[in-house]
Length: 271
Image (cartoon, rainbow, N blue to C red; front, side, top):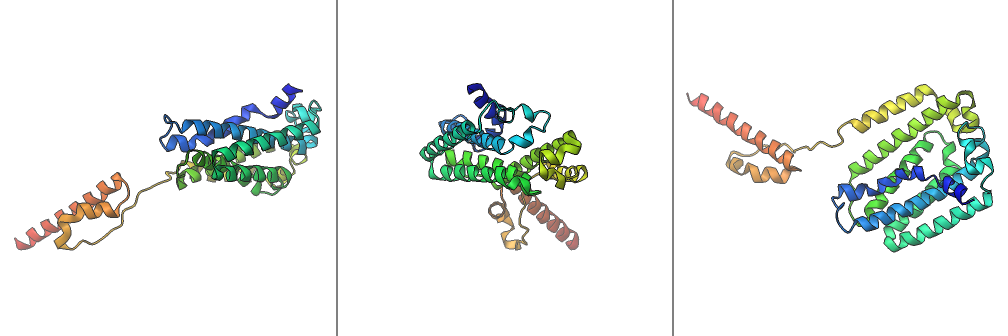
């Protein structure tokens, strides 16, 4: 029984919860005491995601029996009773939320949102085309957001964008694999697959892949016309109008080049 519960928690899938450490890594706090609340957040989300897997397996036990691999899952195979699975899931959620409250109120709210969202996914959202993959992607975003709240750092908008695009790529890839593997039985196993096609999935994956690998940030500098009396002060004013060290260099170099061209033109005119 214990082995069946452990298998149903899907420890191999807990690698997805590594998104919790995104804030720790990109916030440059990896080798600070902040690592301890981050580890706690990771453990909490492992428990919560395990509970969601149990609920999902209970909801899909009849359809899983049609799948060549999922039919071996303990609940679908009958090795783990439904009541036991739901009881373990409820205990994990309760323990996880209590532990989340000890970290911070914000972390608790995100943990609650994660449980509600993924429970809604198991019950309803996975049957809505496009919304199903968006829900999976949002689950990854909540993991990353929870990680930043656990160590009290601000999350970058670009981190959110990269997280949701990467998650969409994984979710769409999973849908494509199921569609091609099950072929005629795809809709019987997962009804939402009837709304997809190989061509549509390939197009969506191509768009998401291109969006993911495209440089996600470019620093821009505001262009200004400086009066001749203030040319000498272009460097400090340029710094105030640009973002980032590279932008400062580009902006000030452009200003210096413009001043050089104007000086050269003036010399030519006098000659």
